[in-house]
Every structure is written in structure tokens, then in C-alpha cells.
Length: 194
Image (cartoon, rainbow, N blue to C red; front, side):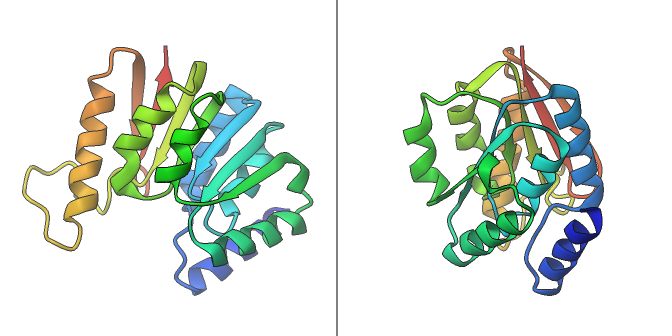
């Protein structure tokens, strides 16, 4: 399975498709094995690498959102190849529109790996969906090392960097959660509900 998963990762990288990096995926697996979530929500399916990684790491079920139709169908196909379709629900749609409709759902674990400019709003929506001691795993929070600086980011990255800075401040100041930031690859923030 690991070899097939690595093949899928390499294929995505050859096509310049952004997928979770290996050390980050390893940290994600460790968290899943520690938390043993039953219900997982992922924002940003891409081609399904994250879903497959999570389902192989734990016994939970994953609901995953993807806006891009081609990637949605590729993810569906990849998940079927691994025989994991029965534990996964893929939703084709914009997370900005779909998440507000899911507010009554409850999740033990949520993965942010979608639009970085939406992390702050996603946090506001997903925090209330978390079960007690539920966790949010946010990937790419360093964003090329630009989120820690005080300087005004260049135009190309401005929207994402400013939004991620607000997200990092919001979570750090939230008394209802504890945060752990891991400086590996593109940066990970783990937010656990108290």
C-alpha cells in the first residue's frame, strides 16, 4: 500500500498538483493514531491522497470537500483503487458554500488543506462542529515562510498571507483551544478543543 501511495504522490507532483508533503503526512498519521477519530472532515480533497492516507492510518470515516470537478473525479477513482470508498464521502462543491450547510454535523478531527484565504472562516465554522477534545490539523500555515514576518507581503501572496496571519492570531488567542505549531515543511498548526 505504501508503494502505491507513493506512486500516487509522485504522479501528482509530476503534474504540479499540490499534495501534502511526506513529513507532514507522517505527522498527520501520528495524530490520527493518537486521537482515533471516528468522523473526519477534510477541506480540500485534491486527488484523494490525503483521504487515502487518513483512512489507512485509522478506522474512522472521512467526509471530504473538493471544488475542482476533475480533481474530485480523480480522487473518487483513486480512493476506489485502494478499496476505501465505503469509508469515504466525497462532496463536490465550494467549501465556502458547503460548510455552512454542515453546521449540525460533528467531527472528531478536521483537516484544513484547501484555500488558505479561507482558513479563518473555516475555523469559525468548524470549531462548533468539533466534538469534545476534537482536533483541527491545518497544513501550509507557514506559506513559504511569509506568515511569521511583519512585512507587507507582495501582491502575489498577499491575500493568503494576510488571511493566514489572522487565522494564526485567532487560534492563538482562543481560550477554548490549545495550539501546537510544528515547523516542518510548509508548517502545521494543530488546534485541540478543550
